[in-house]
Length: 341
Ligand code: SF4
Ligand code: SF4
Image 1 (cartoon, rainbow, N blue to C red):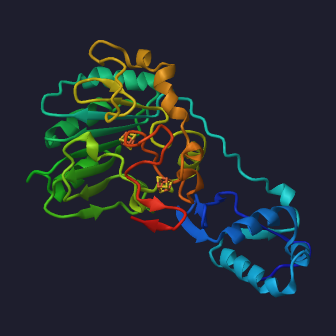
Image 2 (image 1 turned 60 degrees about the vertical axis):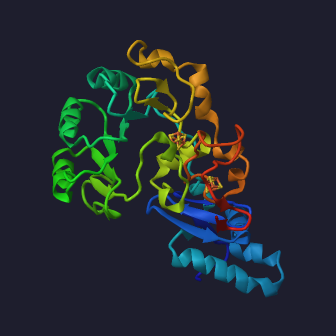
Image 3 (image 1 turned 60 degrees about the horizontal axis):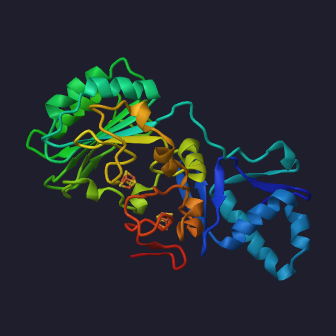
């Protein structure tokens, strides 16, 4: 530890400390990493913004100084911050979130009996400014349809498309890889009911970072009841946008619109409430104040989640809950005991 008199130790602006009930975390938004720290270190990080380390130490017994050095050593080893004599020059990053689009993401559910007019739906989503679409096919394998869908989107502003569909022998890695190579806007293809679990992730260093992934899951996903799983593997440490959105809005439902397999317009296919059917109703007309109320339920309002160190990297499912502001039922994490299950 090489601190000089009068030096403050600050976290990098994109390394954000989040306090939990029993421990805290530091979310490194640039390198997409999460570190666990004690709540004492969390408090020290806050104090170090207002006082240099040498001044701060004077307020404590000398016996506690080695603990200070160990804490700072941890932050230095992981390259989470820097020394400065002028902290005013490094104000914290704004944690506000906004987006010019009324809708940023959409889910379209499909079953054998669905007869969605995708061309019309895409035009409407384009008009709303939607950027990401997820298709979920529960009982079919639409390999041949993927090309048609992607061609319809070719001149749109949609930037990413995810497909979830049922395994068939046609779902060879070669066939799926061919699709992801031909259509660069495919983010992920997830095949459920596969003979084995396998994941092929594009290297982050590639020019298509985060895109073109292929996942085979043994689990069957035969209805929207499978959605809403909360687990560490689904945490999203994917940059400032998602993190600040989770601080200010609902991390699943904000600016989302869903079209259920029968055309019902919803916040998400699992929620009961429908705001009309896309066959008769325009999407923008469905987005009224009642529709938007889900957008504003944030993690800081939710029982238990509000003291969880994962709260801004975790999805907030509102479809499987007991009460309006209760923790998602599919989460088994206890932030008081730090245990899952
Ligand atoms: S609210 Fe729950 S069920 Fe609905 S889309 Fe989000 S995670 Fe899935
Ligand atoms: S307690 Fe809440 S924030 Fe924490 S992991 Fe569970 S759902 Fe996510």
